[in-house]
Length: 123
Image (tube, helix red, strand yellow):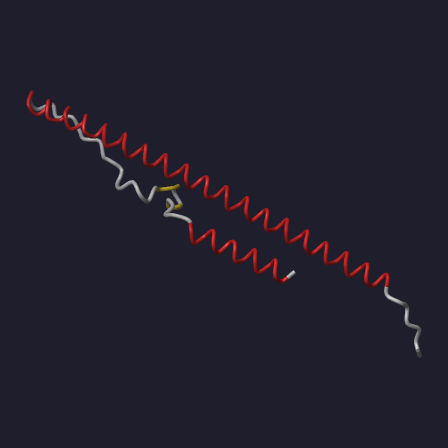
């Protein structure tokens, strides 16, 4: 039984070691860790035609940057969800295997006790 428990702990440590960088959970939600800062939308400049044209160009650039950012964020979020799912599934399997091992060992001990010769006091 201890061997199975050690194997379960070792498996958990190995799974943690191979995980890549994940996003960060905060009290306000989740933030990606590999996508850089979230692009900030520029304001439109209505002061002049050239200023307005420049701000429209800046908005076009921002839209492209935002598309890359949100694509990265989605990819990282999906990877984190998969990593969490796989970790939970592995822990459930490890628990099931441990319970089955304990039950098998308990049954074995029970059968040995039941089949052991009865020793009378004083013999």
